[in-house]
Length: 278
Image (cartoon, rainbow, N blue to C red; front, side, top):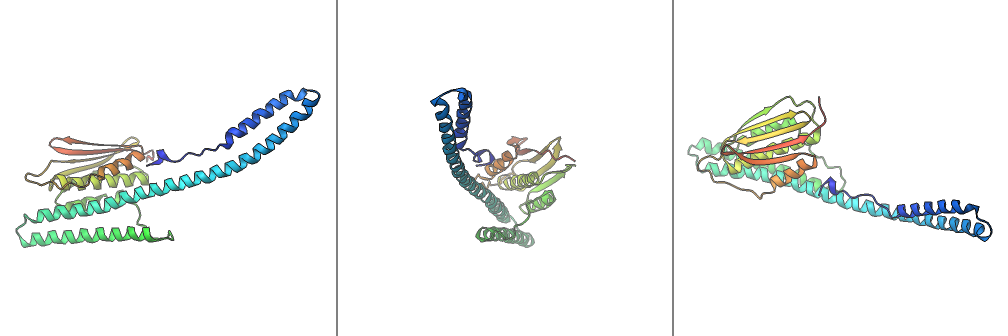
């Protein structure tokens, strides 16, 4: 569910008001009549108009309350979907890194390398646990005043890349002059890079990945291309909801998401329109 399914405001009072206006016009046309018609018609029109107006006001208020209820229900579902996507990002990304790092530890021989891998796993676990606790605190807080971490922006891209390095992935980040980028698009860019690197770590293992973020006129383009799976790497597939949720986010912004094999590897490309130009 997204903005395209937002409830529309409709009221059955509008057709009634149109009908009353039509009757009033007819009454004015027949206003030159003589005799009983000239007396009865105005009374009928006035009485009918008053009754219709009272009904229309009541109907308008009832329809307004019903619309607000539908809008509230839609907002609740929309927020639940957002929370579900955020929880997926936290759990899937964190556990994905832990799984990949733990799997690679089996092939390590030097104690120092094993100790480094265990340290990475501990750090990622603590971060994921802290994020889950923060989100659960927000969900439990009924006052609505719970502190919420600011949404990701382009400044966290290097941090996202460094986090992927702990899983063995060798990412290279290139960000050209983007000019001004709206907050929603910045968040979508970060989500795209995070999801793409997480998928690479799971499906391809410790491989080279090139991440490019650039502007193409009024469109922001994110391209993540990996060099293909490492020989002997055992894939660690997830639940499959990551790309679905990411596509929903990008589509809601009017963008597109494409994923396809390329030169033995895999390419994920997001194109997100953004009219905020420097």
